[in-house]
Length: 342
Image (cartoon, rainbow, N blue to C red; front, side, top):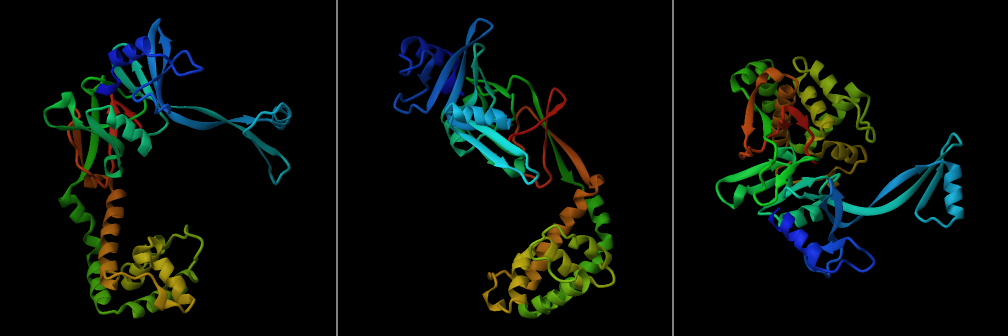
């Protein structure tokens, strides 16, 4: 956070006039961009700078009496709703500064926001020697760049309370990132029981055209599930499919596909029931065999997820780059797990 270093902000606070109507609100950059500013406060008798971007709303729960009294006094942003049991839900929405973080006298920046959207990430990236982004396959919000402005690339998982040195972006506390990697030997052993299911289903899906496949799937859903629950997505098709793996493999595959909506099958089945198969969602890859391959990948992942012994633990320390993963990461600081921003 080189652009938000303590010396620079302190200099602005002591040489630039605050925004009109305030004694402690100063620009962090172009004065005309008055939605980007910092507030000067005190902590242990020393100045602390709160970095702000725009505003957000928070709500305060009120009783019906409090709501009516405030409404009588002209308070705005009130909301009330009468529930089915006759009770009331009342709130007041307050506009507050959208705080991005704090800069302290030790020249550290602390991440304090509830979350960092695209705009917030863009501002902090502008003032740092790297960039913030969201990466679901690396656990959520990360910073990527070069610590100290040189050397190899680094990745820092961003969590609430993270403090970094403004000049170098080095975290003040060591971060350990724990990942998981599939042990192929153990994984192969787990999948042995599915080999016949995969072999049989692949041969059958290769031999079927799409329309025949959908008609057969409609029959399978009617037989085993009593019809497609078009609007209730919670029906556990996979549980029923598990019971049919060895006795009716194609039926099992089709139930898995509907349950996990592989190939947009819920939509396509509804179109079939409405006799509008010709208007189904389609793509050049939307064939029974391609859907089987997607099912196989999905089922393998689900099997791995429920068998922790298939994973080997991998540890990343010192902000080293860690690869994208489908299995998630755990972030530890001083041995305690912290929650990474989404």
